[in-house]
View (tube, rainbow, N blue to C red):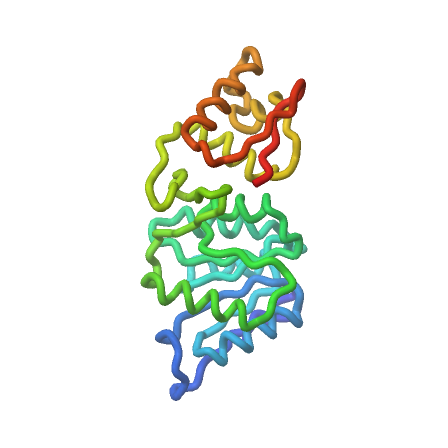
Length: 244
Protein backbone atom coordinates (compact mmCIF):
# COMPACT_ATOMS: atom_id res chain seq x y z
CA UNK A 1 0.00 0.00 0.00
CA UNK A 2 1.48 3.35 -1.06
CA UNK A 3 0.04 6.21 1.02
CA UNK A 4 -0.22 9.82 -0.14
CA UNK A 5 -1.66 12.99 1.37
CA UNK A 6 -4.43 13.34 -1.23
CA UNK A 7 -7.60 11.38 -0.37
CA UNK A 8 -6.22 8.49 1.69
CA UNK A 9 -3.80 6.28 -0.17
CA UNK A 10 -3.08 4.45 -3.39
CA UNK A 11 -3.96 0.81 -2.92
CA UNK A 12 -2.73 -2.15 -4.92
CA UNK A 13 -5.15 -5.06 -4.81
CA UNK A 14 -3.72 -8.42 -5.83
CA UNK A 15 -5.59 -11.55 -6.80
CA UNK A 16 -5.19 -15.01 -5.26
CA UNK A 17 -3.52 -17.51 -7.58
CA UNK A 18 -6.60 -19.69 -7.67
CA UNK A 19 -8.73 -16.90 -9.07
CA UNK A 20 -9.90 -17.19 -12.68
CA UNK A 21 -9.36 -13.85 -14.40
CA UNK A 22 -7.76 -12.19 -17.41
CA UNK A 23 -4.11 -13.03 -16.84
CA UNK A 24 -3.71 -10.73 -13.79
CA UNK A 25 -4.17 -7.62 -15.93
CA UNK A 26 -3.76 -4.31 -14.16
CA UNK A 27 -6.72 -1.93 -14.00
CA UNK A 28 -6.17 1.57 -12.64
CA UNK A 29 -9.18 3.36 -11.11
CA UNK A 30 -9.04 7.15 -10.86
CA UNK A 31 -11.98 8.22 -8.71
CA UNK A 32 -12.10 10.73 -5.82
CA UNK A 33 -15.27 9.30 -4.21
CA UNK A 34 -13.62 6.88 -1.80
CA UNK A 35 -16.61 4.57 -1.29
CA UNK A 36 -17.21 4.21 -5.02
CA UNK A 37 -13.51 3.74 -5.65
CA UNK A 38 -13.31 0.90 -3.13
CA UNK A 39 -16.52 -0.68 -4.41
CA UNK A 40 -15.28 -0.75 -8.01
CA UNK A 41 -11.94 -2.14 -6.86
CA UNK A 42 -13.65 -4.87 -4.87
CA UNK A 43 -15.76 -6.05 -7.82
CA UNK A 44 -12.86 -5.96 -10.27
CA UNK A 45 -10.61 -7.77 -7.80
CA UNK A 46 -13.25 -10.45 -7.37
CA UNK A 47 -13.33 -10.84 -11.15
CA UNK A 48 -9.62 -11.58 -11.28
CA UNK A 49 -7.88 -8.27 -11.94
CA UNK A 50 -5.02 -6.52 -10.19
CA UNK A 51 -6.42 -3.10 -9.24
CA UNK A 52 -4.55 0.15 -8.63
CA UNK A 53 -6.79 2.64 -6.84
CA UNK A 54 -6.03 6.37 -7.16
CA UNK A 55 -7.96 9.11 -5.40
CA UNK A 56 -7.17 11.99 -7.73
CA UNK A 57 -5.31 13.48 -10.66
CA UNK A 58 -1.95 13.79 -8.91
CA UNK A 59 -1.95 10.18 -7.78
CA UNK A 60 -2.88 8.97 -11.24
CA UNK A 61 0.06 10.90 -12.72
CA UNK A 62 2.48 8.67 -10.83
CA UNK A 63 1.08 5.59 -12.59
CA UNK A 64 0.98 6.89 -16.17
CA UNK A 65 4.22 5.16 -17.13
CA UNK A 66 3.34 1.90 -15.40
CA UNK A 67 2.21 -1.33 -17.02
CA UNK A 68 -1.56 -0.78 -16.79
CA UNK A 69 -3.86 -2.56 -19.25
CA UNK A 70 -7.01 -0.50 -18.66
CA UNK A 71 -7.85 2.78 -16.95
CA UNK A 72 -11.18 3.75 -15.40
CA UNK A 73 -11.11 7.54 -15.15
CA UNK A 74 -13.59 9.94 -13.56
CA UNK A 75 -13.72 13.20 -15.50
CA UNK A 76 -14.48 15.43 -12.52
CA UNK A 77 -11.51 15.22 -10.16
CA UNK A 78 -10.82 17.68 -7.33
CA UNK A 79 -7.26 18.37 -8.44
CA UNK A 80 -7.48 18.15 -12.21
CA UNK A 81 -9.43 17.15 -15.31
CA UNK A 82 -9.71 13.43 -15.99
CA UNK A 83 -9.81 14.13 -19.73
CA UNK A 84 -6.20 15.32 -19.50
CA UNK A 85 -5.25 11.86 -18.25
CA UNK A 86 -7.14 10.26 -21.15
CA UNK A 87 -5.48 12.63 -23.62
CA UNK A 88 -2.01 11.73 -22.36
CA UNK A 89 -2.69 7.98 -22.33
CA UNK A 90 -4.21 7.88 -25.81
CA UNK A 91 -1.40 9.95 -27.34
CA UNK A 92 0.91 6.98 -26.94
CA UNK A 93 1.71 4.44 -29.65
CA UNK A 94 0.70 1.50 -27.48
CA UNK A 95 -2.22 3.14 -25.70
CA UNK A 96 -4.09 1.25 -22.97
CA UNK A 97 -7.86 0.89 -22.95
CA UNK A 98 -9.76 3.66 -21.14
CA UNK A 99 -13.27 3.80 -19.70
CA UNK A 100 -14.55 7.25 -18.73
CA UNK A 101 -17.03 7.75 -15.91
CA UNK A 102 -18.83 11.00 -15.16
CA UNK A 103 -21.48 12.22 -12.76
CA UNK A 104 -22.79 14.64 -15.34
CA UNK A 105 -23.80 12.06 -17.93
CA UNK A 106 -23.38 14.87 -20.41
CA UNK A 107 -23.40 14.13 -24.13
CA UNK A 108 -20.57 16.60 -24.66
CA UNK A 109 -18.39 14.69 -22.20
CA UNK A 110 -19.15 11.46 -23.99
CA UNK A 111 -18.34 12.79 -27.43
CA UNK A 112 -15.22 14.55 -26.19
CA UNK A 113 -14.05 11.34 -24.55
CA UNK A 114 -14.54 9.37 -27.73
CA UNK A 115 -12.73 12.07 -29.70
CA UNK A 116 -9.76 11.48 -27.43
CA UNK A 117 -9.97 7.75 -28.12
CA UNK A 118 -11.62 6.34 -25.00
CA UNK A 119 -13.01 2.83 -25.37
CA UNK A 120 -16.21 3.18 -23.34
CA UNK A 121 -18.20 5.61 -21.20
CA UNK A 122 -20.34 5.05 -18.09
CA UNK A 123 -22.58 7.72 -16.56
CA UNK A 124 -23.09 7.80 -12.80
CA UNK A 125 -24.90 6.30 -11.02
CA UNK A 126 -24.14 2.79 -12.26
CA UNK A 127 -24.00 -0.72 -10.84
CA UNK A 128 -20.53 -2.16 -10.21
CA UNK A 129 -21.59 -5.22 -12.20
CA UNK A 130 -22.01 -2.97 -15.25
CA UNK A 131 -18.43 -1.77 -14.93
CA UNK A 132 -17.18 -5.34 -14.64
CA UNK A 133 -19.17 -6.30 -17.73
CA UNK A 134 -17.72 -3.44 -19.76
CA UNK A 135 -14.16 -4.14 -18.63
CA UNK A 136 -14.50 -7.82 -19.50
CA UNK A 137 -16.00 -6.94 -22.86
CA UNK A 138 -13.06 -4.70 -23.77
CA UNK A 139 -10.53 -7.41 -22.93
CA UNK A 140 -12.52 -10.04 -24.79
CA UNK A 141 -12.79 -7.92 -27.92
CA UNK A 142 -9.13 -7.01 -28.34
CA UNK A 143 -5.70 -7.84 -26.98
CA UNK A 144 -4.22 -5.60 -24.30
CA UNK A 145 -2.48 -2.57 -25.78
CA UNK A 146 -4.27 -2.78 -29.09
CA UNK A 147 -5.31 0.74 -29.95
CA UNK A 148 -8.06 0.04 -32.43
CA UNK A 149 -11.32 1.45 -31.05
CA UNK A 150 -14.93 1.00 -32.03
CA UNK A 151 -16.14 4.36 -30.75
CA UNK A 152 -19.51 4.40 -32.47
CA UNK A 153 -22.17 6.94 -31.57
CA UNK A 154 -25.73 6.84 -32.92
CA UNK A 155 -26.50 9.57 -35.43
CA UNK A 156 -30.13 8.97 -36.29
CA UNK A 157 -30.15 5.82 -38.48
CA UNK A 158 -26.41 6.22 -39.06
CA UNK A 159 -23.37 5.66 -36.86
CA UNK A 160 -20.55 8.09 -36.16
CA UNK A 161 -17.08 6.67 -35.63
CA UNK A 162 -15.47 9.58 -33.81
CA UNK A 163 -11.95 8.21 -33.58
CA UNK A 164 -11.77 7.43 -37.33
CA UNK A 165 -13.96 10.41 -38.35
CA UNK A 166 -16.36 8.27 -40.36
CA UNK A 167 -20.12 8.13 -40.86
CA UNK A 168 -21.38 4.58 -41.37
CA UNK A 169 -24.61 3.63 -43.12
CA UNK A 170 -25.35 -0.02 -42.41
CA UNK A 171 -21.64 -0.65 -41.97
CA UNK A 172 -20.75 1.10 -45.23
CA UNK A 173 -18.74 4.32 -45.18
CA UNK A 174 -20.69 7.41 -46.27
CA UNK A 175 -18.82 9.81 -48.54
CA UNK A 176 -18.60 13.01 -46.53
CA UNK A 177 -15.91 15.65 -46.25
CA UNK A 178 -13.95 16.46 -43.10
CA UNK A 179 -15.83 19.75 -42.72
CA UNK A 180 -19.18 17.99 -43.05
CA UNK A 181 -18.07 15.59 -40.31
CA UNK A 182 -17.24 18.57 -38.06
CA UNK A 183 -20.71 19.99 -38.64
CA UNK A 184 -22.36 16.65 -37.84
CA UNK A 185 -20.27 16.35 -34.69
CA UNK A 186 -21.39 19.83 -33.63
CA UNK A 187 -25.03 18.86 -34.25
CA UNK A 188 -24.57 15.71 -32.16
CA UNK A 189 -23.04 17.65 -29.28
CA UNK A 190 -26.02 20.02 -29.36
CA UNK A 191 -28.79 17.52 -30.10
CA UNK A 192 -32.25 19.01 -29.67
CA UNK A 193 -30.94 22.57 -29.53
CA UNK A 194 -31.49 25.28 -32.10
CA UNK A 195 -28.03 26.36 -33.26
CA UNK A 196 -27.37 29.49 -35.28
CA UNK A 197 -25.27 29.66 -38.42
CA UNK A 198 -22.75 31.70 -36.46
CA UNK A 199 -22.50 28.95 -33.83
CA UNK A 200 -21.95 26.35 -36.53
CA UNK A 201 -19.23 28.49 -38.09
CA UNK A 202 -17.50 28.86 -34.76
CA UNK A 203 -17.88 25.20 -33.89
CA UNK A 204 -16.88 23.67 -37.24
CA UNK A 205 -14.57 26.35 -38.68
CA UNK A 206 -13.35 28.08 -35.51
CA UNK A 207 -11.33 31.11 -36.71
CA UNK A 208 -10.42 29.58 -40.07
CA UNK A 209 -13.22 31.24 -42.05
CA UNK A 210 -13.99 34.88 -42.65
CA UNK A 211 -17.03 35.53 -44.79
CA UNK A 212 -20.79 35.14 -45.10
CA UNK A 213 -22.36 32.67 -42.69
CA UNK A 214 -24.60 31.44 -45.52
CA UNK A 215 -21.83 29.02 -46.46
CA UNK A 216 -23.30 26.86 -43.69
CA UNK A 217 -26.47 26.44 -45.76
CA UNK A 218 -24.49 24.92 -48.63
CA UNK A 219 -22.82 22.41 -46.33
CA UNK A 220 -26.10 21.43 -44.67
CA UNK A 221 -27.65 21.00 -48.12
CA UNK A 222 -24.83 18.62 -49.08
CA UNK A 223 -25.18 16.69 -45.82
CA UNK A 224 -28.91 16.26 -46.41
CA UNK A 225 -28.20 14.96 -49.93
CA UNK A 226 -25.54 12.51 -48.77
CA UNK A 227 -27.39 11.40 -45.63
CA UNK A 228 -31.06 11.58 -46.68
CA UNK A 229 -32.34 9.64 -43.64
CA UNK A 230 -30.89 12.22 -41.24
CA UNK A 231 -33.42 14.75 -39.99
CA UNK A 232 -31.95 18.24 -39.74
CA UNK A 233 -34.67 20.80 -39.16
CA UNK A 234 -34.37 24.33 -40.52
CA UNK A 235 -35.06 27.04 -37.94
CA UNK A 236 -36.03 29.86 -40.26
CA UNK A 237 -34.24 33.13 -39.76
CA UNK A 238 -31.81 31.50 -37.33
CA UNK A 239 -30.15 28.21 -38.20
CA UNK A 240 -30.80 24.48 -37.71
CA UNK A 241 -31.79 21.84 -35.20
CA UNK A 242 -30.80 18.17 -35.13
CA UNK A 243 -33.20 16.16 -32.99
CA UNK A 244 -33.23 12.54 -34.10
